[in-house]
Length: 456
Image 1 (cartoon, rainbow, N blue to C red):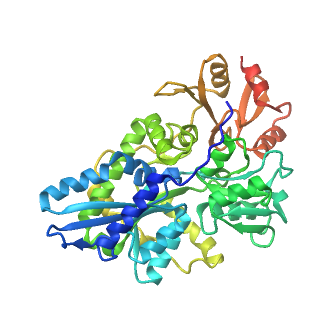
Image 2: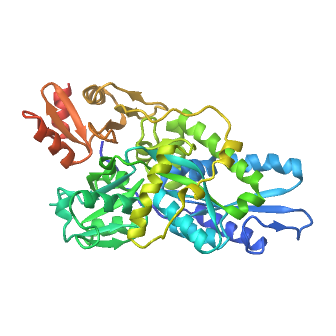
């Protein structure tokens, strides 16, 4: 089930939307969320910053935009108060430019990862444009949303092998945080022990392919995409840290106070998009794939029924606690000073707007098979059953299997397989498989084809 390389050009639709966004913001005298009375009718433009390819933010970005739920909520509000509401969607590769635009008063609502959220809080306070965290998009309780990868055939087999090597990441991102913590645990100085390249995800991917970077630490969906395309091999699964990571929604405090109803509408729309994704994960993956140019198989790896990300707007205590543990790392990197996380988190808007039953906490992922032409997937109780079914099936689109230790879902044909007696176990990384075989005498690593044969 090899992946097909895809290019990720900036969509013409995105360019048009950005141009429209610029015009709309200009019509509002350069301030997001402002009023425009020049045409005799009152108009309010809401500017939303999102990351289309950071696909565990889709319920506040790509998917939400494609479904039109926010516009629907605003249209209903407009019928009641006689105001015309418009949404200007602005697409970025990382959270940093969203924060820059928010602190300049040009973006009202934005979504980004946990480390960028802290920088958002710090910059907002510093520049007297305070922001507040109001909801979560997707999370992974073990940290599996971030991965370190190397080029296929690389001699680098462990984090310790990265000493003196060039590692690409986006400084200040959640993926950078994973890299720093992982290196520290491996006994490698994250600042002096490696040569860190501060690059955008796409630039880092190109650097890895060109050999100008020895490894790449990035957030969704880049590691999965590169693995799917055969352009990278997983070196370190972020879930090995066993520390929660998530993405969330932040809003300018001034906007939240002056336009509380609009914020409520956004969070209601986000809840609706979350319901849609959880109830129709295949359709949601196809939709996000169409909007972003990413393969649907990669989107589903993260956003599927057993995907690496769990979607839930709730500001879970364990996620907020994890955010507090992130502050010292950002302080050490001199990216923030003190951050009052409790003051940054505002639970009131979500409590007002997102009414509905609570979602259950993420459960252990199961092996999953997606066949061509099917709008649903099949799950299995064991990796062996998955491989057996995949071998006899016609038109396999993708087969996914969870890591035997971390639970991180991965492509079955990209996983590292271990046979232990009559059992088959899958691992995201070679080091994970080695740790298992070292602890289980008689077990051995086999390739995917051999694993399929043993499963039959």
